[in-house]
Image (tube, rainbow, N blue to C red; front, side, top):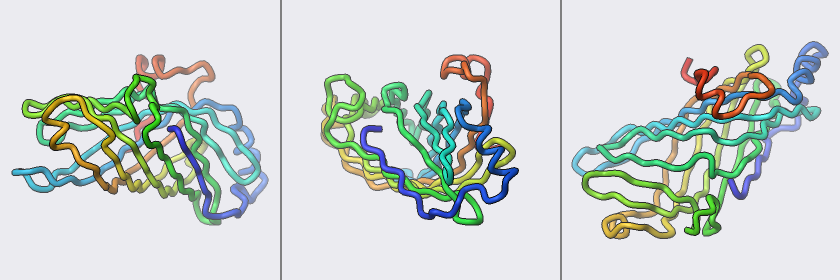
Length: 222
């Protein structure tokens, strides 16, 4: 995503014993497949509070630098569960690549991130922000959105894989809309979501397409 800062909360060495250090070094340059699930709640007219779910599948290259692991990643697919009959779509391939870094607090791996963009055309379609397509029997069209997401995460190494949980505070700004209905009803939102994530090593030549075709190798909900 266009502006990304990953500020770690501790400078304690990531791997304190020689065996763990050697294992971490062996990860350097590996390709990992990732999966993140984010659950939230949203108030829907005439239905009340509705639970939301977003699944994101990523591919990342691992870099080990002394006291941290950095995953340089890109999104392969984002799927948002329909809410009250409303389906929302975005082109995950248009999202900018980003880094996700982890360091240790002496107990587990801990980090935070800021992902933010405003009116810049991040998906290159000629509209401000990121284009989100909305499909509903009542109100359909396109929304052009800005985003500010702040994440806190905890994780641990499970063998040579990484598993953890993340809490994300999302502030979304409506920059414009296509569709008379959406132009009237769409508003800025503030939302907090959380859920598990997982990464596992795959072959060096793996791509988003090859992993999708063969069956995604890691499930954050396992």
